[in-house]
Length: 98
Image 1: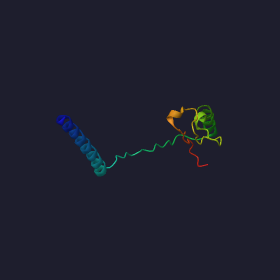
Image 2 (image 1 turned 135 degrees about the vertical axis):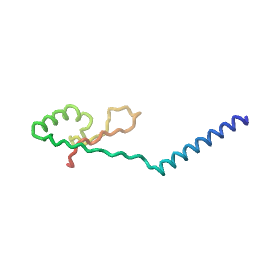
Image 3 (image 1 turned 90 degrees about the vertical axis):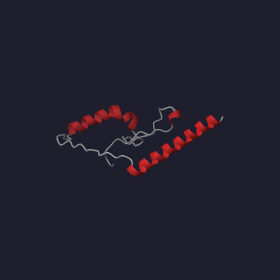
Image 4 (image 1 turned 180 degrees about the vertical axis):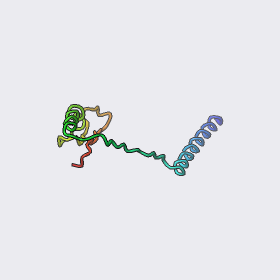
């Protein structure tokens, strides 16, 4: 019984040391942050044909999950998923502020 108790105490001590070491590491070094390079596409022009083509693609593919109650791609609650997953929201995928 003493051997089992001693092994359990060593295990608890190891877990405590690991948690404290990890917390200290995060405090000293911080959570890693990475630079995000913004890609600039100077050759892409937004003419009416490209916008119409994008609207056609969005109306076929994206609107299924992302059409909100306002009829725009503003996101909504996904009712099709089983309730086991909880309440899942699709995101607003437009870049427009309107």
